[in-house]
Structures are given as C-alpha cells and as structure tokens.
Length: 282
Image 1 (cartoon, one colour):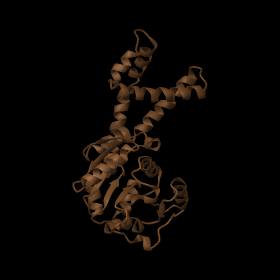
Image 2 (cartoon, one colour):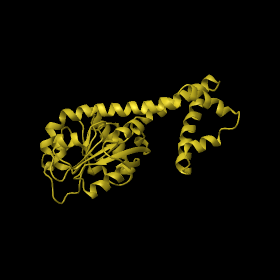
Image 3 (cartoon, one colour):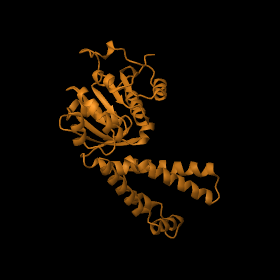
Image 4 (cartoon, one colour):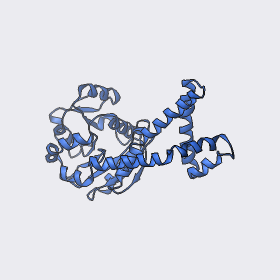
C-alpha cells in the first residue's frame, strides 16, 4: 500500500490522469471521498490527502487503501488539478499565503470553508478558478445537501464535475456566493437542529412511559419517514401536516403547544442566527 509520495512523483506528467487532492482529511473530506469512490468519479489511487496528523493519516490509509498521503501543501498542489480545501476557515486563512505561490493555471480549487467568500478566496489564492461549496454532515451516509457557487474562471468541465461530485453524497443546489451564508444557516447547520428535535422527541416518549430504546427508534424513523414522504410526494409540508391533523385530535393538541412555545419562530430565528454567524466568519 502506498501512503506517501516520493520526490520523483512530485513532478507532474502531462500524460498522467488528474489527481484529486484534499487539503485536510477530516470527516467532511472523508465523506466526500467516499462519495467520489461510490460514483466512480475517482479511484483511491487517484486521491491524495494532505494531513499533518499521523493518527489521521493512519485512519485515511485504512479507509482508502492505495491513496497517497502527504504532510504539506507543497507536496499536494504540484500533483493535483482539483483540490478540495477542507480545513477549518481559520486554518485556511492562516495558510493561504504560503499556498498562493503553488497555484497554477490548471488548478480548480473547491472550498468547503464556511463563511469565506469567493472574493476572499480569489484574493488569498490569486486565482478565479474557485468553487465554493457548503455541504452538510449527512454526506457521511451519502444523503447530504449542498449548495455551490462558482467564480468567474471556472470552466464548464470543472463545474459539471463538482456538481456530480456533490450529487455523489446527496443533492446540490446552485446559488449565488452571497446566498451561501443562508445555505450554511439552513442545511449546513441544519443537521444539529434535527438531531436536537430527535433527542427531544425521544425524551418526550420516555416521559410518556416508553423505554429509551423504543422512543429513539420511533423518533428516528418518524423523522426519516416524514422527510422521505415530503420529498417523494412533492406536496407542501403544510398539506401533509393537515392530513394527519384531525379535528379535536391528538396532533392538533400537540401543534397548539408548539405554536404557543414559539417552535416555528425559534427555528426561523436559529437559521437567521447561523446565517449571520457565517457572514461574520467571512
């Protein structure tokens, strides 16, 4: 198994296939890599991870046998044409200056750093061939939701490839760069809202007398099934909600409490707060 690049392999070959690089090897990077493999957009031998942590390198080698592992951007950028910038925003801000000189005309940079605009990325890396993406954690089970925006010099081949790349881990929508803050607030941070709701639903089941195991099973399946029902029927959630809300029944009694406690407005305010935080990060 090859887990590192030799000095000779750092010399790009004009006939070599394009390599897919990951600057950072955390959870989102591994999720995206799994999607690329599942959709056959890349093979493990075409993947190069830049990850300084030895423990994380070991994990990546186990997950992607045959991939290459390097410890610096100076080893990654010369041998990859498409590079996923998958480090935290503050880290990317710190290291961008040292990477700028490594960027060449064939590079397409794909950033998943929350809040960092295309204008800032273009300034930091000295190129307009940049795609900004906001995925979410369900990409780990190939059920993610992503938004993407392209800078002006992204060619059609790279745009289409990135779209397919994101579809390999779920669904993708095209939005303006400015609206990616809203995507961050809604779907980027959204899994946390749903997870909190599942936890609360399970707690409610326990309070009503169910076991913890049974409550969690029912809560998880209810959320999963309801989301699938909305997606597959194409009906507005309000229509589906009315179908299960009988006059003077149990559901309307519960909905009345949620309305009294501000469930709907709290969710809207939470998404706006996350969106504003994304803007502040940039």
